[in-house]
Amino acid sequence: MSRRGAGIGPSRAKPVAAVALVVAALLIGAGATLLASVPNLAYATRLAGTPGLFVVRSCAVVGAVRQSHTECTGTFQSDGGTVVDPDATVDQPLTVGADVPMQRTPGGGYDDVGVAAFCGWLAVALFGVAFAGAAVMTALALTGRGRRRAGWLWPLGAVATALMSALVSAIVGALT
Image 1 (cartoon, rainbow, N blue to C red):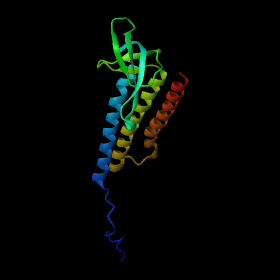
Image 2: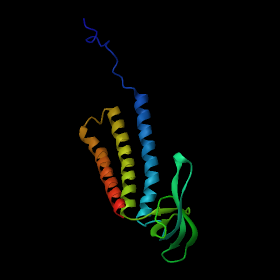
Image 3: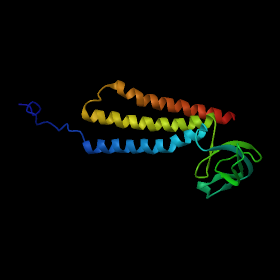
Image 4: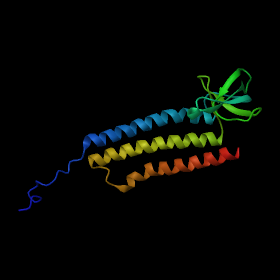
């Protein structure tokens, strides 16, 4: 008699702990990604923060060789003129003398505004949605309820949309 027929064959039990760890990692990734991106989406669209203009006074490369970045200093003045920061600092390469629209965050930082910034942060947020979708679909597959391939279309759609949004951000950023 075959061992398979007797039910003694190799175990087909799913490694529940490993799958639970993957689901937890995906949910943590989704949460962290969404927590970082959603506030910046609001700043990019000028729905949060203080809108104004950053006038670039000087720029310099700062930091160690492998961790160097360009830091520009200048003056930030809000659109209404109520907030003026003569020692504003932005961690990005800008043209000295340029007037750059920025959004001041409640913490005193500065974020880019416009289509390129919005599309970039939208791409990050959509990756967070994709992580959450992958976590849900993995959990459903573990319970035997997510065996339909169509269920994976929405996380994959989020990834595809995120990639398109990142492309738009890159193109618009390069043109401006």
